[in-house]
Length: 248
Image (cartoon, rainbow, N blue to C red; front, top):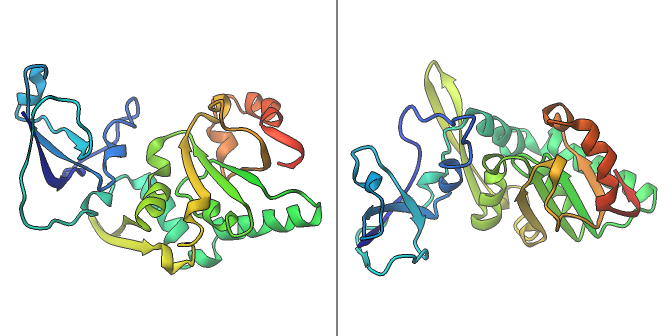
């Protein structure tokens, strides 16, 4: 049978995201996916190898037999340290020291001022290229609903962690190969009451999911256009996702 453990999956020493498969392991480093041991009659043989590591959420029942073990409490947030330098940089940018007067917050404030000046509705807003999500949360102070969107699930993970667990953790280089672990709580920024107004979605901005539409405000966040495969396609089609008199 499968055996769920209480140990969150997380990166081992030397972990690196592979550019061709960046959404396989990273989305499981969220504190909800725990190491799973064992197997069953329908499991493939690669689970039995020395290097195999698999993790599922503990409510994930897909096999006939399953066994639980009760032990000492573990740090359920241990998996939050994603060991992804790019994601960590954006998370420090959004939630680290000085972030309350940083670009992510100032961008939200500037957009809201423009919307107010031009009598733009503040019903539904898209923060495209949202990265770690701070701008999305700040927009929710004045917008009814905010949808943060980015091309990779690993980029939106800190925002998802803040929304689901009201905290996130990351690492920053300190000296040589050493890293300093950091964390932030929703209460640090006064966004704990805004979390229910914000969701995060993995989607290619050049080919957005069908349900991502009806926006009163669309933000094309920092460096998004230069990262897109076809910026012209995005700019020529984004109006189809927006209401009349919407703000881009």
